[in-house]
Length: 261
Image (tube, rainbow, N blue to C red; front, side, top):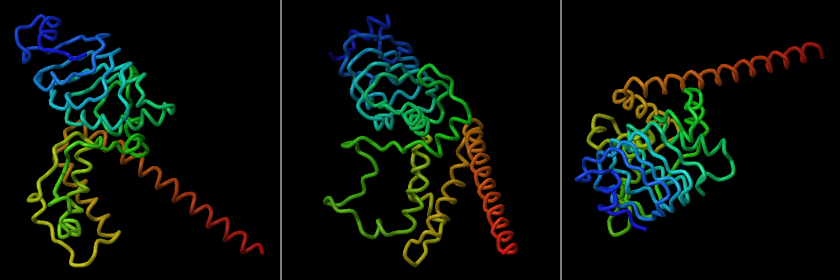
């Protein structure tokens, strides 16, 4: 069933779509929600217990803060890529969809990696530690097949110069992180001040570019987002410290064993 303008206005008791801020369409047997492309001001949306397959119509609902999608037919977590632009989204209920799979822990970490601003997922409060863990261990959510994204091709063939340009790798690193935080990608001219190495891209250069990307991102993050980065950094440093301590103890044990023998 398609959600129509007439049905939306009747349920919301409104005169036009742009004035609708809250809408409850629980159990309406919906399959087509394309109407939301015309509803940029919706803030709270209940679509639980329907037959929705795609979340792409919600990509332009930038005011959305609460979204309830329990018991639908969403096939893959890749659909969450459509929610990345929704920087105000704080509550998401996605449970009981095919995309949730059987590994509840990994499912949750993957969702939170894709949408790190969430404060509540499936009626459970999200903690800072959980976000930090998700950024490290959650799976990367890719854009669903068929979606138009970052296409710079000519007659179906990618430009070789662009593909091998080290500056382009730097852009990709930066925009990949920005995408995960629901931010708009930066244009190529933002990187014009960076020097392009003459040699082939190496592991060392890629690490340097990743650092450049992170540093560029920090300028655009707000206080809440910086707090997430700070917590994730602290946890990462603790892991390095523990690894270093283990290595030191191992080396000391080996030296002791050598002396005794």
